[in-house]
Length: 348
Image (tube, rainbow, N blue to C red):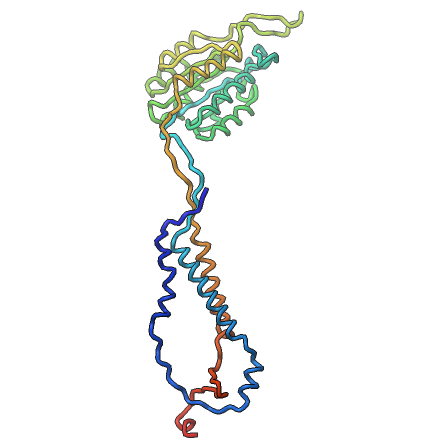
């Protein structure tokens, strides 16, 4: 951060008041004089501070001139350089919030967590890395809902994902509706940059749109879809005989593979947190972040401050002018100069 002068050559005007010293003085007409015998006493009663006031007034006038020239030079505050990518991906994340996403068959360290919490943990890091991309968030269950439109504010998208809860969009899985909504939101973006990442742990069993027909529409719109099947091969289920391991066969991998293939994307299977993190790493490679950057510095004009101060000084000087100007001239002989009112006064 720094302060600069946009027009520093205006400072050349600073010595202009000195030119007044080089100009010839105007001839002053000698007024008539009247003898005033009590002038010395009157002058003593008025005080002898006129010279100090004149010097103060001159100093304020010079200060006002300095402020005016400083304002004319256009001082500016320059902020730190900001780098922004010229182009980036337009990427929608579609996350399944159906009831099966609460199954705790994923682990973070030694702690068992639900599928949704695993997605939040890994997807949050992915969002943080995608600086410069426009990200959006779709949550789907019985229906698909737009939670965050495309934005460069990845922090907000991550916060909204963290706040998502199981059952918020319903208990079932409308994959086709989620794809259709993503196509609608990506339609206005550059074709080569339209990407949808769809995470689900089940099969399409709700909604009004068939997933494969939605994939055909996505292909025609230039939207690449990367599908991620979330969940382990086995899951823990509470039964009358206690907690037992059962096979997890809800995932429709064939449909997810077909959706990805139709749109030029790819299908991934995330059986644990580590594999999910690896998938997002592969996505970074397949959809790299743009390296082209555009730099700019925020600029704030500051000329209004010295200009306002100069105007304030000028107004104060004008208000106080009557008190600082000497009301009568005098000579060393105790004469007071006065303009006669008429010819008769001169003869008097």
